[in-house]
Amino acid sequence: MAEGTCSHLAAIATIRHPKHQQCDECVKIGSGWVHLRTCQECGVTLCCDSSPNRHASKHARASAHPVIASAQPNERWLYCYPDDAFADY
Ligand SMILES: [Zn+2]
Ligand SMILES: [Zn+2]
Ligand SMILES: [Zn+2]
Image 1 (spheres, rainbow, N blue to C red):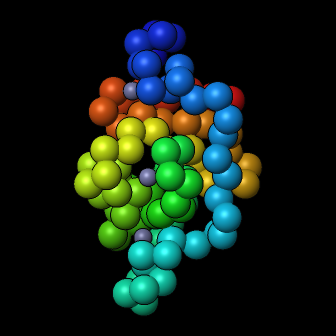
Image 2: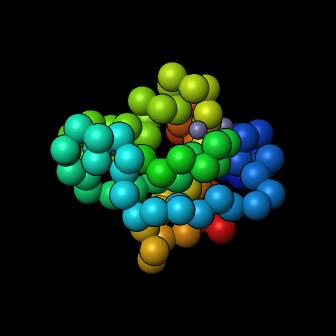
């Protein structure tokens, strides 16, 4: 990925970290998840696209919140859905 192609990632000044290590939407419906992602617009933590319910990408589309960060403790990257762009931090 070429740097500077995504204005959403460039606009992130402070990384939002997960408040809880859980997907609240999955907890509500009694489901499970694989990995967690934190929305950089509103701070909600939801499950990744490898999870059965894909709540993070559904939230990104429904709310037009483009950028998530990995909520995995050992991972430090951001992802922009509309531009399909990754960035390390
Ligand atoms: Zn973008
Ligand atoms: Zn979920
Ligand atoms: Zn959001």
